[in-house]
Length: 229
Ligand SMILES: [Zn+2]
Image 1 (cartoon, rainbow, N blue to C red):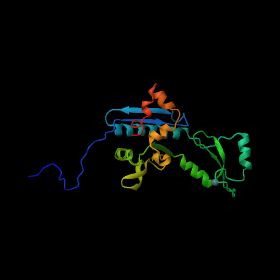
Image 2 (tube, rainbow, N blue to C red):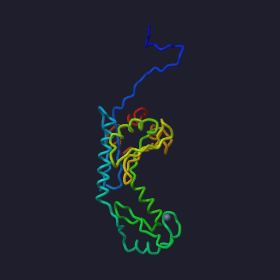
Image 3 (tube, protein in one colour):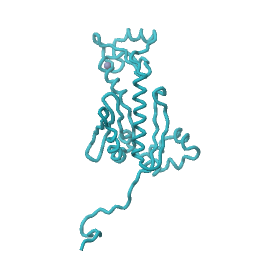
């Protein structure tokens, strides 16, 4: 006869709890309101991961579209900035002296604002950095990323792919979604702070976004098991 009762003389696994995701909260911070307005999103209900990925995809598409249609390929310089550019002898980023035909007007491609005289190599690097949209999950490497990957893959197409950078099969350093031109990079903020969310919360004095979104008494929201899971 067979039984479902585990044999006490052998090692076995007994599930004692099941974790289900019931909500998400996400704050989008933008320095360019003309491209996307800073705002908070929240959802609770069924299919949270699916709903979250759908939301972030719609944000990503909107940002990509707006960047494409607002791009300023030419820098906007006033007289003082142009004089400064002409006189510059070294790159404002790496500090190296300019070689012949190596000086460019490095600028913000969204606002057109001139940032300084830079060498070709630094200008190219700056351009690459602005193609990334970072998305932070606290402790995402060990937890949330596992749920995200499968759902993100459903949104792969001819141009947009999922790429994983992993330490091992269980721990992901980052997940990229997108194309060469523009991508979302999911990163783990724990790798930058090395503190649990409850400790991070303790080190902060004010919570303007929480206060605005949840009105009134937010002390409960700052406690462990609310912010830290
Ligand atoms: Zn340089």
